[in-house]
Length: 415
Length: 80
Image 1 (cartoon, rainbow over the protein chains, first blue to last red):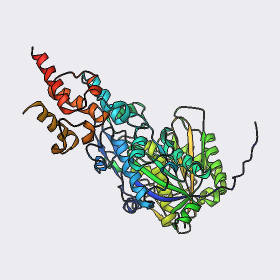
Image 2 (cartoon, helix red, strand yellow):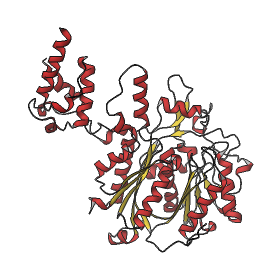
Image 3 (cartoon, helix red, strand yellow):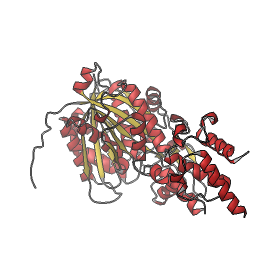
Image 4 (tube, helix red, strand yellow):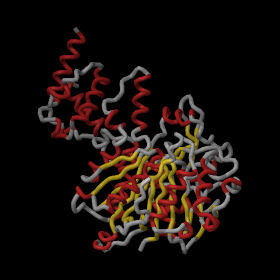
């Protein structure tokens, strides 16, 4: 094994200039945060022909409103949501027209890209009808990125990361690397996912990982860390950030909403779907190292915490291994209990919460959970409603994917 | 309603293009119908007119009048 320096090199800090989200909790960041802190759920019951009902966290807004009818040609739900959230992030950053569009890059994470287009196309075909002519360019996994590039004039690297549930966390990490190595000056980074279509939902049901809708309270269908947790709840949506180097933010007279101080991506290389403690530990340790922080410096962890029987204890064990005696002080929650699992967009949406926690000095809860599985105890779980934490300086967000890729992002309080 | 009018209505309904902008003799690009939009349009035409438009039409025809003439020929051939 070759060595190589494990010290974080002195590199430019990467700051968050803008945030945009189209989430099941809404599009307005402050309003969505308030709902999250209050312990609200965005889940509802959803029916598909021939399938058992599912609990799902949907976007209620008309996502097609982002474009004119003519411009909608070649787009679909995932690209429309992505465009809406990316435009909001760019507007929030207030950067205006790009000084040099070739120095702007797009880093988009999505698990299944244009799944709803392919689903509808194949459904038509198998029903003896014709498959629509733009199914390939609309349904391709980089379709959303291409639409964003066209409408936001992004002429630098336009990249799509398909790393299942870690997709957009990886996209954010890669965007920060590109900024640090000077390849670009502005990064639009985030993710989008829209898979609430009959065929895709049926495939998820067949995998037996979905929680059944809770009979008494559909909002309580996803129960991370709870002894009665029964699986994940699918969500949809998009979240994007505008990232810039510190020097460029300063030159523009703007502060950072928070700093993306560290990240790591490590693979279990063991199993298609089973999580693995070793790979998660590796990601957590390297993320902290890259940020130049110790475990005890991190005040809040937005867990991957999908609410599956197998997944949650492994994540808690990995945190226990890395944090040791400092674990008792680490606030932990899984916001998937409120907004479901956005799969490829999960890392970006949950990064929004990790950043918002720093900005507000308060941490969001795992809503709807009151009792903890003994295998998940150790960290200071935030349950029910959010908590004030004015001294919070650093947060971490975990995204641990099917396929074994683990991504952790470390954020630090901004100006 | 003649074929050109039917096509103008279809383009208006499907893509929200102002009918007054749709010059039957002007290139499709003049009212923002690009190659992908034309593919969508032909797909919709096949449903509406119950004809099969040959693949070559998408590249050889550049105006609405040309498309209407082709459709009239295809419909006449079907009727014969």
